[in-house]
Every structure is written in structure tokens, then in C-alpha cells.
Length: 207
Image (cartoon, rainbow, N blue to C red; front, side):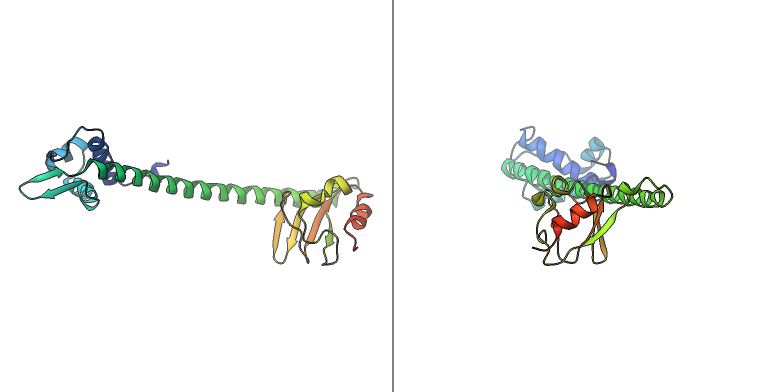
């Protein structure tokens, strides 16, 4: 996990102490070192140690009191805290992964849109690039493919054309996958050879 998203130092110390208790380095009823000693051991401030111990107190792993120091209360609760902490870390890492994938998805969609723009631009200059110039077809509720997915209708196999995008209201869905469902009002962006255009119109024509 990225250091920018890592847990606070006091949480890591609390986890380390809980691990030590669970592994038997400290026994129930045993006293921990004082906060000053722990601060030196972990090379942090006494306030950081205080916050770490407070976490363990809140979950019943230790008890801290003036004059008596820090007492180990429960190995079982130390184990439960370790698992809970790991679950929280796992959820956090999943959330970060989703954000990273969403950013990559946006980058890919932007790149696809840029490539389509370049294709359209070049096709207006070069006369032999008509196969790469998307043409548009609007879908009505009477079209035979309305309400079906691209994979379900085997679009490419039946027409020889490729759907490179779907315009839906104010949204453009680029490079739709086989599970993309075609809806009434959609405008399909399709590329293919000249003769493919008629094949597509026949294929999607009303029943």
C-alpha cells in the first residue's frame, strides 16, 4: 500500500503490541513497559504511545492507570483486534484499487475518443478510409435488436461491422463490450466497408 495512504503510526504500534500479546510475548496480567520506555523502543513521542495504548484500552486488550502502568488484560481480544484491523486495511485497499481502475478506465475512454476523432479527421482527407469512418444508426423500440446485448445478437458475425460507440442522451459509451444492452433512442456508431452499411440496416430493421 502507498505510504500516502498508510495507517497512522499509533495504529501500527497498537497492532504491533496486540500481535506481541497474541503471540505470547506478554502474558495476561503482565505489565508492559512504561510509556516513556515504549516511546524510546518505537522511536516516537509519548503522545503517540498514549494514543496507541488508548486504542488497545478501548477494545479491552490492556488497562492503563497512573501508578500501575499498563496491564495486559486479554489475549483473545488482542486476536480480535488484529483481525478487525486487517479487515479495515483490506477494505481500504479495495477502495483504493477501485479508484485506480476508475482512473485507468477514464484514461482508456479518453484515448479511444481521441483515436476516433483522428480516424474521422483522416477519413475526411483520404478517400480510401471509408471503412474507418463511423456511420450512425438510430435504434427504435421496433428494431429487432432493441433490448438485447451486443453479444446476444452476434452483431459482428451477422453484419461484418463493428460497434465502436453508443450515443445515449448526453453520454457516449465508447468501445461497448458484449454485455452492453442496446436501448430505444440509442445511436450506434458503426465502422465497416461500404457494403456493410446495408447489411446492418437489414439486420436491425423492424420485424
